[in-house]
Length: 106
Image (cartoon, rainbow, N blue to C red; front, side, top):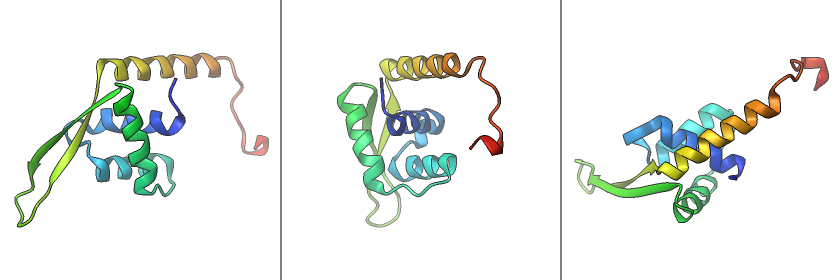
């Protein structure tokens, strides 16, 4: 099992494909959640996911502008994709048969 933050980051990496580097991942997660995420809130789960073998990373070529830095690109591993599929299955099962939430319920 992964945390919700790790899940959102895994999904962002999968969605972004070859553009999955820290700034884009952070932007994607903020777009999806509608909340501010600090870079630390993204880097820590990224590091955990890499250590757990759910993500791989590599340095891309430096950007062409003067002094451009290489970006660390992340990709889900087969284990990472399996984890996402498992999460989706669990969530669908947990929500199956639940009544629709109404504004007054919250």
